[in-house]
Image 1 (cartoon, rainbow, N blue to C red):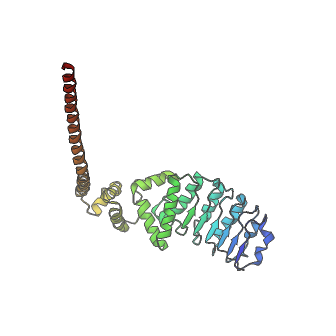
Image 2 (image 1 turned 180 degrees about the horizontal axis):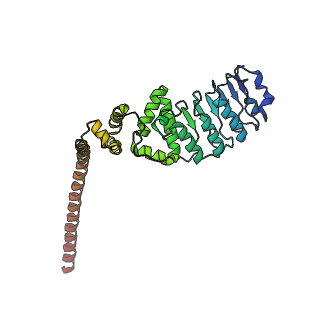
Image 3 (image 1 turned 120 degrees about the horizontal axis):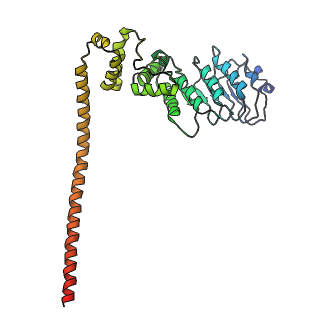
Length: 311
């Protein structure tokens, strides 16, 4: 047997199903039961289990620890873990998040409609994008592609979680995903500062201090290419003057380049504004003509009224 579905079967203890006799089991659906004991899963008897659905049960903290042990095991085969409506709080969610730090198999996690909110979101954001260093960002979890941890009310932290899991979905292999995350979250000063604040990490104006000098030109080239000259200049400032001399960067030329870029944007905006200004001017003229017409009509009406009185 490879699939076992016990949806809404009044099961309270998994051991009663004797799952330990099903070594080929790949899918186990135990949703909508009254399960409070999943200790039977804390064994090596389900070596091929890929999809586990425990939704709408009350597995508690002990259950999360058991699941955490499964996810941390070398050679874990779980690719989908569904835990919606399982009365999980922030502490339990953090246990699950920690267990996934080195997991490379779980692709889908559903923790929707549980008690965990802010700490839960932050734990999974750090799992997916740890901005404490460039190396940690590069080595963050690259496997979790569908991470549903949020409630109906969205916020900035939860949006970042979904954004990072989307990078895992579309980023390709782990190396390319790591590179994308470094570019997106470390090489943009505003984004990095925001994530440091969310994760409670002291923000450094120079995140490249521990990077090998020989790699810096490539990193700086990426900043300029992906985020523009202003971000490149922001990255160079804390490294100057040594780095500027090393790379033969002309700061004045760079500032002029930024100014030229800004002027081009201003000119483009001016072109967009020109038709609107012309339209407003035309409408002003029409309003003046309308007012003039009203005044003339008022004079005519007044003359007619006066003639009637004289006659």
